[in-house]
Image 1: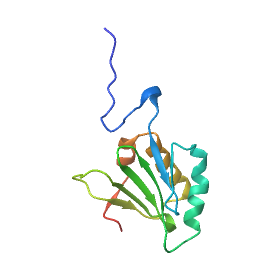
Image 2: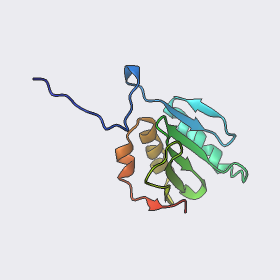
Image 3: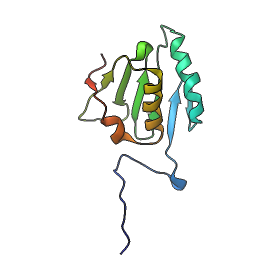
Length: 123
């Protein structure tokens, strides 16, 4: 009998194995399923330190979102569903660490993101 591998419910796969994700620019514009090569330029937008639009984000189709602010502050929350778990954050992350988290969101690897030492709340 062949072994059947089950994916956790939060790792949604579309036809062809593609996970939908969206990036949000400081301007509020969104792009769907862009190349991950855009992450550097997306993070450059945060370095612009626009006080009106201080963050960028990457959101998985299931609503789980990483918001990125200046000085390596990252927020992890579900913006679409009522969750028993509220927003959480990490402080002082390096750019490579932030890119790793964003890549995990784009690939739908939520359990790996959950393994980080998140602190409760937005700050």
